Length: 127
Image 1 (tube, one colour):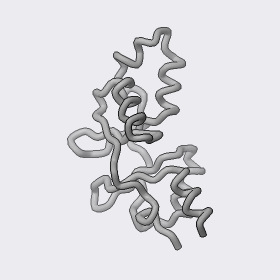
Image 2 (cartoon, one colour; image 1 turned 180 degrees about the vertical axis):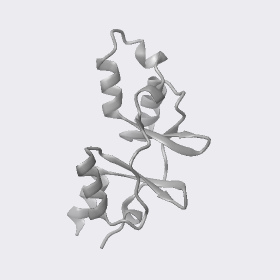
Image 3 (spheres, one colour; image 1 turned 90 degrees about the vertical axis):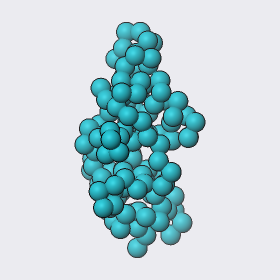
Image 4 (cartoon, helix red, strand yellow; image 1 turned 180 degrees about the horizontal axis):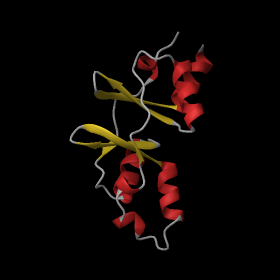
């Protein structure tokens, strides 16, 4: 069975919780990623996604929200994670049951990667 380690992205896109929505959007755009991992002191505290950005903008009365709102106010706190030896099927089950598309991968307490629904779909289509 294919494991997450085989399909995860190890080049992490990260911001701190104090980053603005605009800074997070820029990081995602430059790296062509649908999410950023939110780290504080090197520890994972949340995940901020394109959906979170859209929700924040839709709930704001002005476009200034992107320049002044912090990621920490919109991110998913304490996200579900998986280990690198979890199978693609286990990761898919976690993501489908939780309703999210990005899964941080933790090994020995450290973030070592992230896997997206797209990564999983690609791996399944190759089998």
